[in-house]
Image (tube, rainbow, N blue to C red):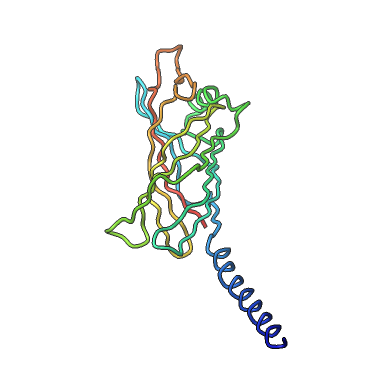
Length: 200
Protein backbone atom coordinates (compact mmCIF):
# COMPACT_ATOMS: atom_id res chain seq x y z
CA UNK A 1 0.00 0.00 0.00
CA UNK A 2 2.80 2.36 0.94
CA UNK A 3 4.59 1.48 -2.31
CA UNK A 4 1.52 2.42 -4.36
CA UNK A 5 1.12 5.74 -2.49
CA UNK A 6 4.80 6.61 -2.89
CA UNK A 7 4.72 5.56 -6.54
CA UNK A 8 1.59 7.67 -7.17
CA UNK A 9 3.20 10.72 -5.52
CA UNK A 10 6.38 10.23 -7.54
CA UNK A 11 4.35 9.92 -10.74
CA UNK A 12 2.39 13.06 -9.89
CA UNK A 13 5.62 15.02 -9.29
CA UNK A 14 6.99 13.79 -12.63
CA UNK A 15 3.83 14.89 -14.45
CA UNK A 16 3.88 18.33 -12.78
CA UNK A 17 7.56 18.79 -13.63
CA UNK A 18 6.95 17.71 -17.24
CA UNK A 19 4.06 20.17 -17.59
CA UNK A 20 6.17 22.95 -16.07
CA UNK A 21 9.13 22.34 -18.36
CA UNK A 22 7.03 22.04 -21.52
CA UNK A 23 4.63 24.93 -20.94
CA UNK A 24 7.11 27.51 -19.62
CA UNK A 25 9.25 27.55 -22.80
CA UNK A 26 6.06 27.88 -24.88
CA UNK A 27 5.04 30.92 -22.87
CA UNK A 28 8.50 32.45 -23.15
CA UNK A 29 9.08 31.68 -26.84
CA UNK A 30 6.70 34.34 -28.24
CA UNK A 31 8.16 37.83 -27.93
CA UNK A 32 6.39 41.17 -28.11
CA UNK A 33 8.07 43.94 -30.12
CA UNK A 34 7.00 47.58 -30.41
CA UNK A 35 7.52 49.79 -33.42
CA UNK A 36 10.16 52.47 -32.82
CA UNK A 37 8.82 55.75 -34.18
CA UNK A 38 12.28 57.34 -34.19
CA UNK A 39 13.80 54.82 -36.60
CA UNK A 40 12.86 53.77 -40.11
CA UNK A 41 10.37 55.47 -42.42
CA UNK A 42 6.87 55.12 -43.80
CA UNK A 43 6.00 57.19 -46.86
CA UNK A 44 3.25 57.40 -49.45
CA UNK A 45 4.09 58.23 -53.07
CA UNK A 46 1.84 59.11 -55.96
CA UNK A 47 1.40 61.09 -59.16
CA UNK A 48 -0.50 64.16 -60.31
CA UNK A 49 -1.09 66.02 -63.54
CA UNK A 50 1.68 68.41 -62.46
CA UNK A 51 4.36 66.30 -60.74
CA UNK A 52 5.00 63.23 -58.62
CA UNK A 53 4.62 63.67 -54.85
CA UNK A 54 5.41 61.97 -51.56
CA UNK A 55 4.29 62.26 -47.94
CA UNK A 56 6.17 60.93 -44.91
CA UNK A 57 4.45 59.69 -41.74
CA UNK A 58 5.90 61.46 -38.71
CA UNK A 59 3.90 59.45 -36.15
CA UNK A 60 3.65 55.68 -36.38
CA UNK A 61 3.19 52.93 -33.81
CA UNK A 62 2.41 49.24 -33.54
CA UNK A 63 3.14 45.85 -32.01
CA UNK A 64 4.19 42.47 -33.36
CA UNK A 65 4.23 39.16 -31.47
CA UNK A 66 6.72 36.71 -32.94
CA UNK A 67 8.07 33.26 -32.05
CA UNK A 68 11.53 32.61 -33.50
CA UNK A 69 12.27 29.25 -31.84
CA UNK A 70 11.22 27.07 -34.78
CA UNK A 71 12.62 26.55 -38.25
CA UNK A 72 10.59 29.54 -39.48
CA UNK A 73 9.40 32.48 -37.36
CA UNK A 74 5.72 32.52 -36.45
CA UNK A 75 3.85 35.82 -36.35
CA UNK A 76 0.81 35.54 -34.09
CA UNK A 77 -0.21 39.21 -34.18
CA UNK A 78 0.70 42.41 -36.00
CA UNK A 79 -0.89 45.84 -35.69
CA UNK A 80 0.45 48.92 -37.43
CA UNK A 81 -0.91 52.46 -36.99
CA UNK A 82 -0.16 55.77 -38.73
CA UNK A 83 -1.67 59.01 -37.44
CA UNK A 84 -3.42 60.52 -40.47
CA UNK A 85 -2.43 64.13 -39.78
CA UNK A 86 1.21 63.16 -39.29
CA UNK A 87 1.52 62.64 -43.07
CA UNK A 88 3.67 65.56 -44.25
CA UNK A 89 4.70 66.56 -47.76
CA UNK A 90 6.55 69.76 -46.88
CA UNK A 91 3.81 71.75 -48.60
CA UNK A 92 1.02 73.06 -46.37
CA UNK A 93 -1.60 73.36 -49.13
CA UNK A 94 -1.06 69.76 -50.23
CA UNK A 95 -1.24 68.50 -46.63
CA UNK A 96 -4.52 70.37 -46.15
CA UNK A 97 -6.00 68.70 -49.24
CA UNK A 98 -4.76 65.31 -48.03
CA UNK A 99 -6.38 65.70 -44.60
CA UNK A 100 -9.63 66.80 -46.24
CA UNK A 101 -9.61 63.70 -48.49
CA UNK A 102 -8.82 61.43 -45.52
CA UNK A 103 -11.52 63.11 -43.38
CA UNK A 104 -9.04 63.35 -40.53
CA UNK A 105 -11.47 65.17 -38.24
CA UNK A 106 -13.48 61.96 -38.02
CA UNK A 107 -10.81 59.35 -38.76
CA UNK A 108 -7.58 59.99 -36.88
CA UNK A 109 -5.68 56.82 -37.76
CA UNK A 110 -4.78 54.52 -40.64
CA UNK A 111 -4.64 50.96 -39.26
CA UNK A 112 -3.43 47.59 -40.54
CA UNK A 113 -4.26 44.54 -38.41
CA UNK A 114 -3.12 40.99 -39.15
CA UNK A 115 -5.66 38.23 -39.83
CA UNK A 116 -3.29 35.47 -40.96
CA UNK A 117 0.14 34.84 -42.47
CA UNK A 118 -0.36 33.71 -46.05
CA UNK A 119 3.24 32.67 -46.66
CA UNK A 120 6.71 32.90 -45.15
CA UNK A 121 9.97 31.67 -46.66
CA UNK A 122 13.67 32.26 -45.98
CA UNK A 123 15.72 34.58 -48.19
CA UNK A 124 18.57 32.30 -49.26
CA UNK A 125 21.11 35.09 -49.71
CA UNK A 126 20.81 36.31 -46.10
CA UNK A 127 20.54 34.75 -42.65
CA UNK A 128 17.55 35.54 -40.43
CA UNK A 129 15.75 37.22 -43.34
CA UNK A 130 12.37 36.06 -44.61
CA UNK A 131 9.85 36.95 -47.29
CA UNK A 132 6.37 37.30 -45.77
CA UNK A 133 2.91 37.88 -47.17
CA UNK A 134 0.49 38.86 -44.40
CA UNK A 135 -3.27 39.02 -44.90
CA UNK A 136 -5.04 41.63 -42.82
CA UNK A 137 -7.55 44.44 -42.64
CA UNK A 138 -6.51 47.94 -43.70
CA UNK A 139 -8.69 50.83 -42.54
CA UNK A 140 -8.36 54.25 -44.19
CA UNK A 141 -10.82 57.12 -43.72
CA UNK A 142 -13.35 54.79 -42.12
CA UNK A 143 -13.34 52.20 -44.94
CA UNK A 144 -11.87 48.74 -44.36
CA UNK A 145 -10.59 46.26 -46.94
CA UNK A 146 -8.79 42.93 -46.63
CA UNK A 147 -5.39 43.11 -48.33
CA UNK A 148 -2.22 41.05 -48.74
CA UNK A 149 0.75 42.98 -47.32
CA UNK A 150 4.17 41.80 -48.57
CA UNK A 151 7.35 42.53 -46.62
CA UNK A 152 10.85 41.31 -45.85
CA UNK A 153 11.30 40.42 -42.18
CA UNK A 154 14.81 40.51 -40.70
CA UNK A 155 15.65 39.43 -37.14
CA UNK A 156 18.89 41.06 -35.99
CA UNK A 157 20.37 41.74 -32.54
CA UNK A 158 17.06 41.76 -30.69
CA UNK A 159 15.35 43.92 -33.30
CA UNK A 160 12.92 43.16 -36.09
CA UNK A 161 13.05 45.02 -39.40
CA UNK A 162 10.03 45.09 -41.72
CA UNK A 163 10.59 46.44 -45.24
CA UNK A 164 8.33 46.48 -48.26
CA UNK A 165 5.89 48.38 -50.43
CA UNK A 166 2.23 48.05 -51.32
CA UNK A 167 0.20 49.61 -54.11
CA UNK A 168 -3.30 50.87 -53.30
CA UNK A 169 -6.12 52.78 -54.96
CA UNK A 170 -7.70 55.71 -53.13
CA UNK A 171 -11.12 54.98 -54.60
CA UNK A 172 -11.07 51.48 -53.06
CA UNK A 173 -11.38 53.33 -49.74
CA UNK A 174 -14.02 55.78 -51.00
CA UNK A 175 -11.44 58.57 -51.13
CA UNK A 176 -11.71 61.08 -53.94
CA UNK A 177 -8.19 61.87 -55.23
CA UNK A 178 -7.34 65.41 -54.03
CA UNK A 179 -7.45 68.35 -56.45
CA UNK A 180 -5.77 71.76 -56.39
CA UNK A 181 -5.98 75.11 -58.17
CA UNK A 182 -9.71 74.87 -58.87
CA UNK A 183 -9.41 71.33 -60.16
CA UNK A 184 -6.68 72.04 -62.71
CA UNK A 185 -4.28 69.75 -60.81
CA UNK A 186 -5.53 66.25 -60.00
CA UNK A 187 -3.70 63.49 -58.15
CA UNK A 188 -3.70 59.96 -59.58
CA UNK A 189 -5.91 57.30 -58.01
CA UNK A 190 -3.03 54.86 -57.53
CA UNK A 191 -0.60 55.36 -54.66
CA UNK A 192 2.24 53.29 -53.20
CA UNK A 193 3.05 52.87 -49.52
CA UNK A 194 6.74 52.26 -48.73
CA UNK A 195 7.66 50.97 -45.26
CA UNK A 196 11.03 50.47 -43.66
CA UNK A 197 10.34 50.02 -39.96
CA UNK A 198 12.24 48.97 -36.82
CA UNK A 199 10.60 47.04 -33.95
CA UNK A 200 12.23 46.48 -30.55
